[in-house]
Length: 274
Image (cartoon, rainbow, N blue to C red):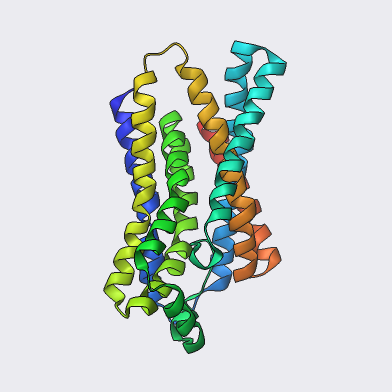
């Protein structure tokens, strides 16, 4: 594995994670949430991740397993890894209360809503616990971005864009309640910005865990299992978080238009680079 690919993968993961700061900045600058644009963007992000997962990542992982274990066992192992990834992110979602869940979407308008402000002040007095919840949530996304970029830098760029779009409204969701908990805009921005850093930490951990296996004869299989799990994580995020959030912010058809557009752009890009 070339060191240049590792550096690129880490850099892309850092960019994706810290994009929460963009959402935080929007929360303090914008007067209203552009719900239509946000709905399209979230749908687009979901389309990119779903298409990549089913068309690129899952088939590649399955092919690696089949070469080693045959068609039936290879497909079975791929499915186990895929649904294992879904189970992992599903458990994380389940054990983080919705009030502290960064994927519970809120708009910029909440900054001016006094009733919401009182609720946020009550719920977010312990900012450290909030930051921890955000970090746990973003951790597997960092692994997904890093591993995808490690496999194929071009693929990694597409996933980085999708995750970054996903993290922008997340930054809004984090910064608004933290602001009302502390009354400090700078602190709210900083905590929101740094909450995405856990994605980079996840990437570093993935690299360190994989490092001992770089020369192993089983590395390809370990990599394939990891990628199949990542496909499951991205599909779950898309179906459980991105699409519902897109519909919540805007209209059903806008979310689907964004979804279709994301798939179309990804299909075209894969065709051109293929």
